[in-house]
Length: 89
Image (cartoon, rainbow, N blue to C red; front, top):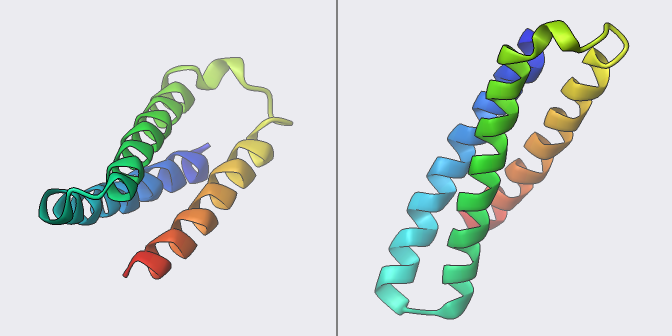
C-alpha cells in the first residue's frame, strides 16, 4: 500500500511541474493546445490526489490481492508521466 501511495505522490509532483510549464506557455502564447494540456494536467492531478487519499483512507477495504494491482496502475501512470515530461522538457 505504501508503494502505491508513494507512486501517487510522485505522479502528483510531476503533474504540478507540468502544470507550471504548461501554464507559462499558456500565458505567453495563448495557444489553445497549451490550454488543453494545462486542463489535462489539472484533471489528472485531481485524479492522482483523490486516488492517493483513497488508498490511505480506505486501506482496510482492500484485500491483499488488490495491492499489487494498485501499485501497477500507479507505476504505469508514472511511466506515462515520465514520457510526457521528457517530451515537454
